[in-house]
Structure formats: structure tokens, C-alpha cells
Length: 135
Picture 1 (spheres, rainbow, N blue to C red):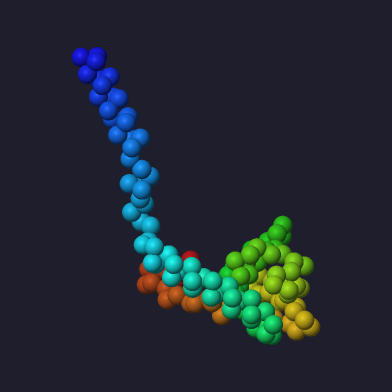
Picture 2: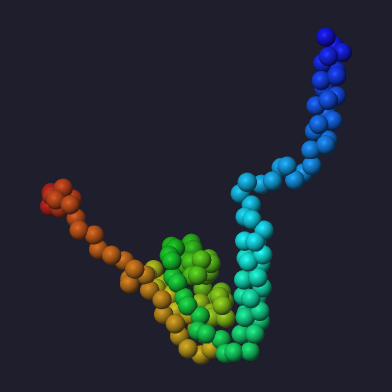
């Protein structure tokens, strides 16, 4: 019995060694033609980015996501970056931070961003209205 187990172990070990790594392909890997196409597109994009450096820069777009305004801290999230007054983001300096807006200074021009435009008023439910009246 021990001999059979040892022999079986040896045969399975040999079989495992003989199996090449090709048998263990990743099922989620795209086919070779798709990878070649992806690499070619990526190379084209790099080439256009390098050639477009000589063209004048486009104006940066600014997205004010949120503002944290308290006595201890005043921070804003602009273009997914946490900044405070005096910080520079994409070449623009944050010169003013208020509870609902910020002001950036870039190349002598001011850029005002506000959260007021993003705020939406919600209709109150009848229960909320009744609760407010009873206060």
C-alpha cells in the first residue's frame, strides 16, 4: 500500500513538472490581437501628447467638490485634491476660502468657484412641515 502511494505520488509529481506554464493561462487576459491593438492606441496617444506640448495650453477646468470650514480647519477639495488657503493647484493659488466658495488666482486672473450652484433645494414632506409648525 505504501509502495502504491509512493508510486502514485511520483507519477503525479512528474505529470505536474511536465505541464508547462502555458496550461495555466489567465482566463480574463484579452487575446493577443486585442493587446496589440491596445498597445498601438496607447502609443498613438503618447505620440499626440508629446506633439501637443508645443501647442498653447488649454484653460484648466476647476471642480469644487466640497469645503470643510471650521475654526480649527479650512480646507477645500478642488479637482479631487485637498487644499488650504495659500496652496497652489495646477498653477493657481487658493487666495480665499469661505464656507460656500473659494477664489483662485492664476496668471493675474481670478477664478471664483462656488458650492451654491451645486446645492439643490429639496421639497419638504408633509410630516416635516407639520413638525416645523409645532416647534
